[in-house]
Amino acid sequence: MSDTIPETNGFSSGVDRPTERRITVALVNDYELVIKGLHAMLTPYADRVVVTDYAIRNGVAGDGESGDAANGTIDGPVDIALFDTFAARRDALQRAQAMKADDNVGHVVLYTWDAPSDFVAQARAIGVDGVIPKTATAEEIVRALEQVVAGHSVGLDDAVKGERSRVEGPELTVREQEVLALLALGLSNAEIAHELFLSVDTIKTHVRRVFNKLGVNNRTQAAMRVVTAQSGLHRPITRSVPG
Image (cartoon, rainbow, N blue to C red):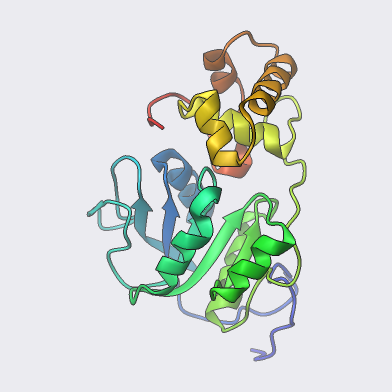
């Protein structure tokens, strides 16, 4: 096996695996539904990555394997804290910095729709080990995590730009998907605006566009119509997870 790992963004599929052992990962987000979706993406790669902990600040969840309760903190030692910044961009860097200071966490990787150059620079400055875009496939995510454990930074050289992503149903922009997912989790327009650093009027505009594209008349219908694949929601959304 080659010991040479190209200096890329970590998504190349043409290099050997940098590690033979399974990587332990804690999944971090504010919503159980989002974490379970991300876990489902990684499950086919259980021979390479094992989810050993959930860290959910809102709601109740258990470990990826052992079933212990989690309350927003990482309970046991893990190779990587994979932080899905969905609905958490406002304090993402502060939380990432706290994870870096956690003796239970070996590396911190952000999983995000978009990361402007200043955000990436700040992430790099506080010691974040990688930034993975949500346009990455599950295979690319796993390979990026392997690169990080092997001692390489991933995705910290360039801004991660939001792109259109694949969804089941009408084509929505990344921002529209994000608004829809937050809407489906039960957040009001004001709460969505707070999370996304946008005005309430801008959120209302996005909501109207989502409704028009989906051909629906209300928030419940919209939530049930579209699977937001890039946020890790792989089944019709319900309001079972409060905002």
